[in-house]
Length: 178
Image (cartoon, rainbow, N blue to C red; front, side, top):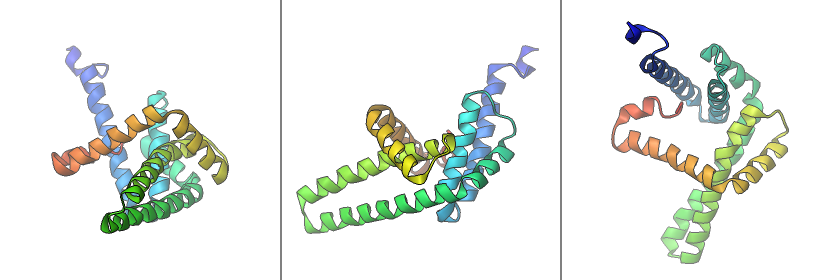
């Protein structure tokens, strides 16, 4: 009868998968107004960091507590990063149309740095209570100091979404939480 025990690793895995599904649904819901994607991502990191430390509690109240607490700061950072990202992508498109190889590679490097920096930013907002400028500097410093782990995390994130979009769409139901 150990199969039906809540301590069984299979049931723990299924419970965690259900938690990730629930968190992903909350993240998608809160990202519907694109402006609040930063606050939703911060709340997602807040809850998953608590889960990693074994301090889960109730997922939905913890998610919305973090969402509400970090709404202004995370939204300001997200809007700024989104504007810079759009400019970098437009620059990349212009470089492709003008066939400027040097500018193309410069744009690609800047876009890669942007992606690395944004990967570290929202976990910092979830963990630290600081000013926007200090969080921005900390995110850049941490991304530069830990380039390989941050790059690996970025590649895993992109891979999950690519698999969800191009291969098996149900992956998208748990990808943000994972």
